[in-house]
Length: 131
Image (cartoon, rainbow, N blue to C red; front, side, top):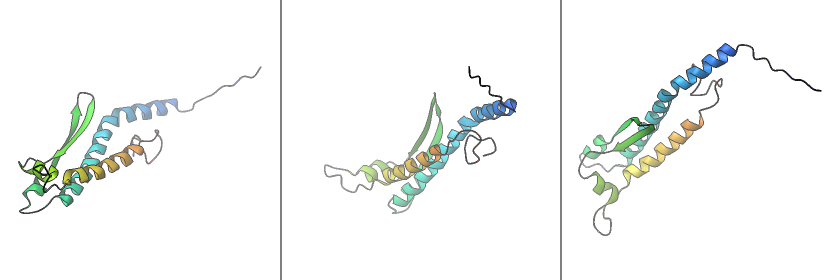
């Protein structure tokens, strides 16, 4: 009969590191959302048409937790922003999709940052306490 045993040296360090990663995860996720939102804002502002710059200056974001969901809200408070984004009238005259273009860049950034969430112990990981 074959017998096998596994001994883990330093189990206290493994437990501590795992607990630290779990404890730090909510703030890491918010940080990732902020970074992706800022990328979205940069692209949206670049794509926004400029007359006096009010629309571009008004593009902002909010990152937070609503219930169990991490959310990022990006938009503009100026009344004409929807008309610039989607156009107006039957033929959608004047639409620019400045926010939608920023959304694509922000989404790509979000995906790349989430893919960096690696198992604990990887120096490049967002979960690693020192990383």
